[in-house]
Image (tube, rainbow, N blue to C red; front, side, top):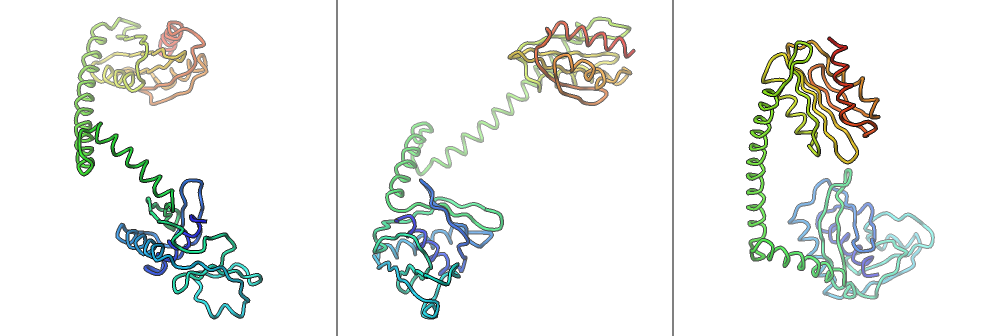
Amino acid sequence: MRQHSGQHILSAAIDHLFSYKTVSFHLGKEICTIDIETTNLSEDEALQAEKLANSIIQENQPIEAKWVTENELENYSLRKELSVLDNIRLVIIPDFDYNGCGGTHPKATGEVSAVKILHWEKQKKNIRVYFVCGNRVIQQLHEKHKVIQSLTTILSAPQEKLEETANRVLQNTKELEKIIDDLKMKFLDHEANQLINGAKEFNNQKLVKVIFTNRSMAELQQLGKTIAANTDNIIALLLNEQNNKIQLVCSRSKDVNINMNNVIKQVLPLINGKGGGSDSVAQGGGERTISPEELMNELCKEISGNE
């Protein structure tokens, strides 16, 4: 009853102030919503509507339920059109809201206690407003205050400086992540050079073939591209075993006339895998139906066959 009456009051407040009509509403188990007929709701508008709604509640105005006939409707300024013309029941807050409704309501606005708008978002061509009434306002305050108190401890900052401190922490984190990414790239470049130096001769070409454990696909791809870009006449076959899965990256330098996409497509069925790429670099993955060593041998056979 409190949530439903709070919805009437909030919808009427928004209508009074801005003429934004409520096109639908939902009384949720914890949070209620109304969809209002506008494409934008500003912070100031939301605060004004909430202030007016709470003033109506604090005035403890009567809430009346009244049965009327179709002919009597001309005596009331209805907030929205009625969906029925027989057995018409109006819920009335005198001089504020006249609305057709069959739901239950308390006898006065004061029983709603309070209305609090939580947030809003776009919903198709409308704005969906999330709000709570009555004891749920206190519950929301309790939950949010608990989070704030936790953050003040974690961030070692008072409530009024939480946003500033959080933004500073996020900025520092971004800078550290960039440093880590740069170091990873340098490490991968160094690793690629070591693999190039250790490449073996294979059918008049240099061949890098490595089986890793628990490496990311992104690292495999970067290694494959770096190896192919930093030397001539070279092929890289990189496999990774992780959680009973096998991933693979196959790359070659520009002067090698082998289509790596075709090579990888020939071996992926052996591991029930999927993947693909370009003629110079391709990648994929699948199940560990055969050992990584067996899969590497099959890749080498495919390369020999594509000479």
